[in-house]
Amino acid sequence: MRPLWLRVSILRWLHIMSLVWGILTELLAWPCPLTDLENWLEAKAGLQPYQGGFLLHYLDKLVYPDISATVLTVAGVVICALNLAVYARQIWVNRLH
Image 1 (tube, rainbow, N blue to C red):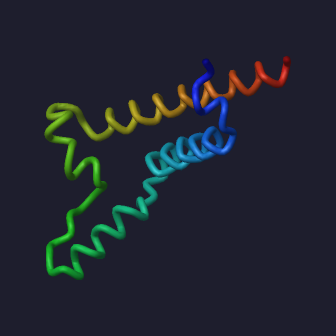
Image 2: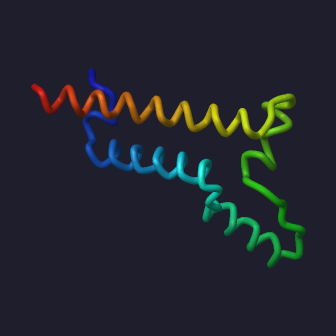
């Protein structure tokens, strides 16, 4: 049985776009709109909004206690790029057949 992302074209393209978005936000330091929304809502509630990204704020010290932010960024970009390479190969193979 083929994976769901191969059977449903819209899911495949949404996932590819999210991978590209993830790579660009890491490399270009774009803010995540959901983090901005969360910080705005916290400020409206009278709470002190956190600085930096959601994952670094909530999970970095818990999951990756001794790894620098640079290593995490490089690892994330490499994983996303590998995933995009798998998509590209699959699309290439499908076009040849």
